[in-house]
Structures are given as C-alpha cells and as structure tokens.
Length: 475
Image 1 (tube, one colour):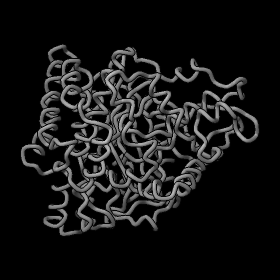
Image 2 (tube, rainbow, N blue to C red):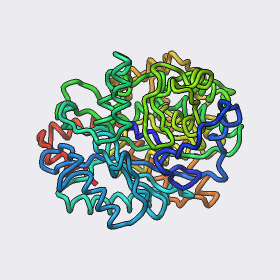
Image 3 (cartoon, helix red, strand yellow):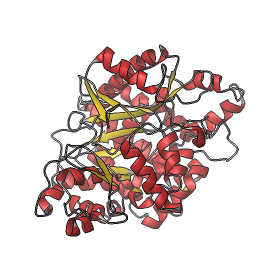
C-alpha cells in the first residue's frame, strides 16, 4: 500500500470520507490529556466495509507514469474529475491534490502521482465491490480521454525511481527529508512513496472486546495474507531480482518502527490503551499550524516527549496533531476509529474483490475470527518480522515460525468462506460473494501466486512488452 498523504483514513467503514487532515484548532494549554488521546478511537455503529484502491496513471505504450503537470498530466485529470463529477477540492499550498466527491467517496493523489479511489462505507462486501467497480471504470474512461491508462496492482512496473516526478505536496517533501535522515532504516521510503500501489480494506469494531478480537486476529494473519497475495514481481521492467513483491520489499526500509507489525496487537489482551501507549513512543514526522502550513517535527522526538516539552516555539501538540500522528503510522492494521487492513499487495483488477471478501469473512464472523486467532496466536513478534523479511522473495514458500505459510493460508481461506456463508445466511450478503474468494483458492491449489502468474505472462504471451502488459492489466 502506498503511503498515503497523512490525512484521515479515506473511505472509512464507519463514516463518510474526510478531508486529508483535520484543521488544527488553537494551541491548547495544558497538554493533551488521556481523554483527548483516546478520542480518535470510536467504535462504529455497524459493521461496514470500505475499499481503497491505488492505481498508476500510465502511458499505454510505455507503461511509464504520467507527470503531475502538463496538458495530459495528473493535475489535468484531477481537474477533469472535479469538473465532471463536482465535489470539494482538496489542496496543499494552493495545489489541487484530491477531490471529495458528492457521494462521500474520494479521489486523491499519492506522492508519485498515483490516484487513490476511496469508497464510501458500504453495508456489505458486495455493495462496496459494486461501488468500487463502477467508480474505477468511470475513472478509467475519463483517464482514457487524456491518452492514459488506469493501472491497479501493487507497484509501478516500468518507472525508474530517479525519473519520477514528485507531486508538489509540502508534506511529501518533509517526509522525504525525514526518511533520508534515518539512513538505512528509511532507505527505501522513496520507492514506497513513488512506486507502490495497494488495495486496502477498512472495517469497523463495535466495542472494546470486539476491538481486541478483531485486531489481534488481523495482525496475526497479516504475514500469511501478504504471502498469499504477493503481486509485484517487476521493477524497471525486469524480474531479474527474483522478488515476488517489490512493494513488500520496499516497505521493510520505511522506518520499521511505524510500519509492519504493531507489537501490542499480537497480545491476546490488546486494547486501545495499549495501542495509544505504543503510538506515543513513535516520533512525529510533521505537524500543521493554524495558518495551514506544514512543519517538520523536532527530529527523533517522540509524541510523548512533545506532550511533555512542546515544540521549539513553546506551543504544544493539539488534538489535530495527534490525529495526524496516528495517520503517520502505517502498520499492517492501522488503528483509529476503524481498522484499516493494509498489509498485502493489490491483486490484478478482476480479483480485487478477494481482498475485502477475505478480511470481512474473517473479521465479521466471531467464530471464524476466534478460530483464526487460535490458529496463529502462538507465533511471536520475532516470527512475524522474520516472515515479513522472507515473503518478498518467497511468497507462499515463506515460513511463519516453524510453520509453512501455504497450509495456514488454506485454513484462513476456509474460515473466511465460512464467515461469508454466515453473512449470506443472515441476509447481509448475496450468495455470489463466495465467488470473490475463488481466485485465492486457485492460488493455493496451484501454488502459483499472482506474482508468479504475472512473471510467466511477462516472459510468455506479453513478450516483455510494456504496451501488452498495460493492455492486460489496466482497468
């Protein structure tokens, strides 16, 4: 999942999509208390489903990403979205970077010019998928008028990082400087920001106990799901590295403190309070002042230290700064008032529905959720980090602790199918949603991940031709 501009979750499951970041209020005194720190974590009123899909805007002949400016650039596309569908423009330093559409969905820019569609909350997987398909197909038609193609998946396969043009967002420049300052732990951040794509799912929790049940299962299952869904074997038009997921590879060096495993979520008794305590120990990257400007945070000062000592000018963090900080954390499940599942590569366009179907089937059926946790609860933090390091190259051959991932994935898929079947029996889903999981059944039956299928096609029928690749994988 590409790192989004650190604003509130887009297309969240429990409420309408919001602007990229809450407007800061006046500087409070004294510092934020515990109630303010817990305020962003609000249980939902129902179990809704949100989908976010990040896509490249590429030249159909070369597969290379469009530039931000120019007659046929990303900005021109975004201006056409606003003119055609209406809505509220989102800007950074006066530059258009997104559109909040009248129905509450959003189309926003990532740092390398990728477009992200974020749905409105839907009452079912089927409705979320229908909304996603309709929106992306309309967007693809509009993009085609500019001579471009809409390309989902997990990674821009043909661009060189050195040739990418950054979207002129002030937050992006601050983030790049921050990650550069980390040295090796931040050394692949630019790959994530410029080249990665993803499909993300946002789900609700309904109570503290429900929060614990869902979050611990989702974190425990994340490396298994990621290994099953690897889908980015090409970088700069080559598969010579042997990696099945360049996206997952890049995320390993984007400040691992704030990405990947959320350590307290592997505990059986994880609570919102434990997540808050963990987040307080992570440095803030940037913050916004009442004049609307973004500023780099004091280097390597945790949010807890900022609460104690304030900023260099004597001001203190506001509730908006805390909300922004939570959006600068990119763990496999990102926690706020929703649970955002972001660990896996995005699949090819026809198979995108498999991602919300899998996570909703596991999360929204208590028996499946508990069974998945029992299956995976014994694996340690060390096991998870080792698996995440292996899976970019190994995919389904990854091991989680001493266990091969493939049979674990098969059991998760069985439990997700049972969860969806229960939702169908309760009248919450139509029967055809079970078919959304069929592509994953094929992956496990054959042992050929989407990445391996893509690599075989690239060297076979696609003849290592970017134009054939785009024609095969575009919306």
